[in-house]
Image 1 (cartoon, helix red, strand yellow):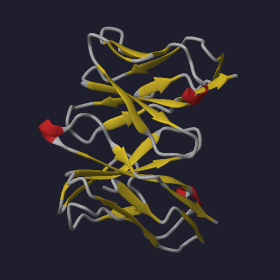
Image 2 (cartoon, one colour):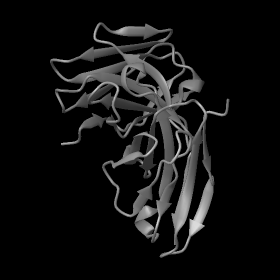
Image 3 (cartoon, each protein chain N blue to C red):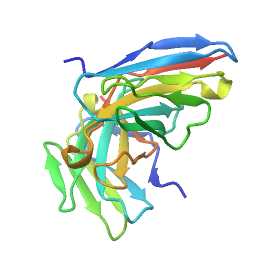
Image 4 (cartoon, each protein chain N blue to C red):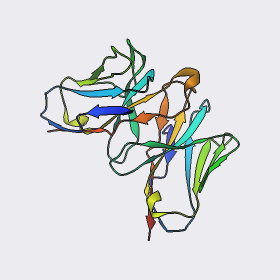
Length: 115
Length: 111
C-alpha cells in the first residue's frame, strides 16, 4: 500500500516551459486535491476532484490544469511556467461524503523552481 | 481577515514544558476542525481531530470554542520530537473538499 505517490520530487523549469506533476493513490479515495505551499505560508488549494471525470477550481487555479480520467490518477499540468509558480506542490486524497473522517493523505511533495 | 489565523511563532520551549497554540477561524459555518503536523520539508500529517467536547490523545489535548471561533492545542511534557509546524485546519462543510489551512505555528523544543 503506497498511499499517495507524487513524481517528480524535484524539478527546475525555465520560464515558459510546460510540465506535468503526476499523482497517484491506491486507497480508492474518490476525492483528490492539489495544493501549493509557498515558504512560511499555509496550503492553498489549486484544483480538486470528487471523482473520475469531475474536476473543479480551488483558490489559486490560474496557470494550471488538471484531469481525472481514473480514480487513481490526478495529474497537474503547468502550461507556461512562471517564477510565481515556484513552490512546493502537494497532492492529497481523501474519502468524500459520509466516509470522510477529515484526514487528508498527502504525497511527499514536488519542489518546483522556475528560473 | 484570513479565514484561519495562527501565530507563526516560533515557540521555543524547553523539554518537559507545556505549550499551547491557538487558532481562530472566521467562517461561523465551519463544521470540522483538525490539527495537522508538518515536519520541515515534509508533507502534513493528521495529528488529531478537534471535537466540540474537547479531546485528548496522550500528551495532546485539543479544544474547540465555537462561540469565540477558536481552536486550541495543548502539548504537555514536550519532547524534542515534537519540534515541527502545527497547522490548524478547518473544513467548511464536513465531507467536502473545502479544507482551509492556517499558515502554521512553529514549535522548537530545546534540550
